[in-house]
Image (cartoon, rainbow, N blue to C red; front, side):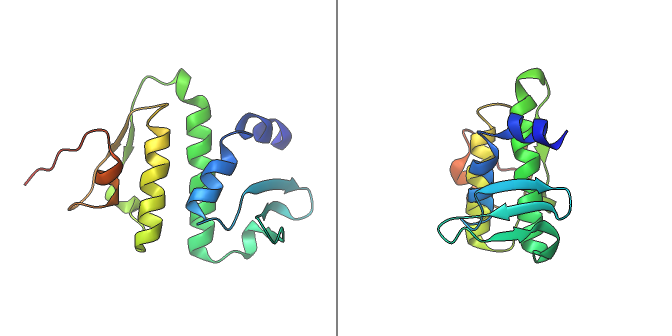
Length: 131
């Protein structure tokens, strides 16, 4: 159920939401009528996921995916491969993603494939540049 999902994601989801939404959201709730609702600090206003602009929807969706992955990571024995398609176009978002992937790297091996150097290289434990 949705309540069970939120309970398992309890400690990790707020961290990823805050990081990837650039501090806009810190909590997610599920409503039977309105679907997923997001709220943040300090205003505390509640916003429906469906009403978010596409870049924010992507950030929230990614936060859920990374939180789920971190939650189930102890049971995994394969690395997470992240391709260049997951490269935000705004430097602040690139840095937030790099930090989120570094956190996730404490639970599962993260291998990011990218073009050129970027924010992720600054937060990686190891980096290999091929020419």
